[in-house]
Every structure is written in structure tokens, then in C-alpha cells.
Length: 379
Ligand SMILES: *Cc1c(COP(=O)(O)O)cnc(C)c1O
View 1 (cartoon, helix red, strand yellow):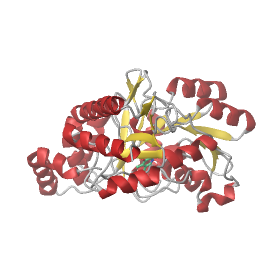
View 2 (spheres, protein in one colour):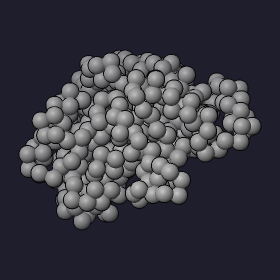
View 3 (cartoon, rainbow, N blue to C red):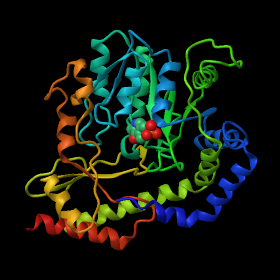
View 4 (cartoon, protein in one colour):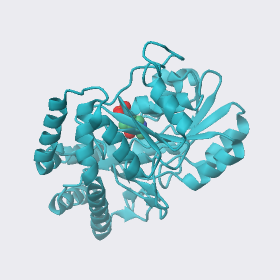
């Protein structure tokens, strides 16, 4: 599914040298590596401010909080995402409002968000998630933000290096959160994240919130939290940032090969359609305006669980992102959603399967994956 060792082997000397440099400096919290990473990541993205923090989850919470999201406010987001997209809203004391996804891309559907905005007056922000490394429709979300005077908080955790019409994810809304969890496209040797924005006041606010609400030592303006990106992680991220464009291009090549192999196997529906008895596999749509960086390569598959067992027996790893939409999670029962409320998310949860995807994946390995899937459906 994902072999992180291949990547480490290819940059081992650079990573080890960076770690040694960071340890030798003895700057573990703050310091020159962090400052350099914040500068270099902001330059890479083309944005004014990048602020390191402890995780992607914290990045979302800090971004929302800095936008003034708190008790009494509502934030519209997608139920078809990682848990933190919704829990970060709840941690601010606000109410998540869940809108359904576009079945072609599985990203938050702007039409459904617009309907939610017309219903609720307390909506303070919309949080689109760039799912699997493909940007949500940021033209439509930008328009909605203007019309309704609300913030756009991008959950860009899966999308470092992705873009929409040539502009990078993390620069497309009011503020954004990234994750450097070890499986993400840009990853640390542990947890990490960052918040990006072009708004100087917002950047100052995020920094203060991540430092116990203090901008002067031992004097606290507000109640913040301890959320920092370590110097060691920053040193590692600086090395990997230099390789990221190359890695993302290779992921795109791997995706292109999957499309070719599936088409040749005659198993697939056209992009964006659903799986049927005739064509048991369906590809998600890759949108023209999006530079998709394939954090995951996800297909819809008929009889998914049996397919996954069949592949596992042949040593092929798969994963399901995500098996239960967030509106049906036990801990969010108090929000009052029920099965059937967000049908596209619920259907996707039963059909999606992520195939092996990482920059170093070999063509022969991909052929084995597709051949095994063809075997399964020809039984
Ligand atoms: C990974 C991820 C997060 C959370 O990031 P962590 O660094 O694991 O806290 C949030 N949202 C999405 C969509 C993610 O994929």
C-alpha cells in the first residue's frame, strides 16, 4: 500500500545530515530550522505566512479559532473526510453543519453548501477538504464566501503541492491547515502541521493561539494551547520540501499508468460514474482545473470487501478512506443526523477503495494490482 522505506533510502544521507545539524544546534523548540522551514514553505506555496504547529488537527483548530469560530457559530464541511475535519470545529465550541459530496470527485459539493448557507444564519466559515490530493471547486467556494461574507478554511492536509488553476492549495481561501503526518505527501518523522494565510493579523493570531495565547512571555491575552513544530521535524521537512514537486509528479505518473492499465483491462466505467455489473470498477473524475497530487489513488469497486480480501491473499494492500461518514459516527450522534441524510457520502463509504500509491511504486507492481483485480471480477 505504502512503502516509506523506499523514499527514505533515496534521501537517507540528506535526512540524516539534517537531523544531525538540528541536534548539534540544540534548538529543539523554535529556532533556525523552524524559521527556515516556515519561510521556505511559504515561498513554495506562494503565500505570506506559514506557521508551524504540532499536527494537522491542531492546524485546523488554530485556523478556525483565529477566524473567530466559537460557541454559537456554525461551520459547513463534508462528512466524507478524516475525523479531524469535524472534530476541530467541535473543539472550537462551534457546530458542524454537514453537506453532501459531489459523487464524481467525492469533494464537498458547493451546491449543497449553498443550500446549507441559505438555511442557517450562524454560519461563520466553510471548510472544503481537498480530498485525496485534489482541490475542491475553489471558484465556487470563493464566490460563496463573498456573497455570504464568511471565511473559507481549507483542510489541505492531503494536498501539499496540489493546485487549482495554477494557485497552490493553502493559498485559495482565508486560511488553511496542512498535516505532515508520516503518510502525507510532505511528511515529517512524526507528527507536525502548519497553518497558512496571506492575512497578517490572522497569522499573528494563529501564532499567539499556538503559544498559550501569549505574545509576551508569561502574559496571556487569551486562552491558547501549546502547539509547536519541533526543530528536528522542521529540519526533515526542509529536505523533503526540495523533492516534493518531483514526488508529486511521479504520483501523477503512477495514477496515469493505473488509468491506462484499467482501461486496457476493460473493467472500468468512464470517469466519475458509478460501478455496475458490466463495469465493476469506476474511476473518480480528475477535474481539469485541479492539479491532483494523488495523496491516494481511490476507485469505486463493486463487492468491495470481497475484493479487498482477495487482494490481501495475494499480498496486495488496500485501505478504505473512509468506511463510515462522519455524520454517522457514534460521537456525533448528538448532531441529529441519520442514515439516508447524506446519501452520496454514504454510498461512497461502501464503494471506495484506495490502491497502492506512492512515488516509488513500480510499473510491474501496478500491473500485478490490476491483473489481480481483473482476476477477481472474472471469477
Ligand atoms: C491527516 C488529516 C488531518 C489531520 O492531520 P494530523 O496531522 O493527523 O492531525 C485532517 N484532515 C485530513 C483530511 C487529513 O487527511
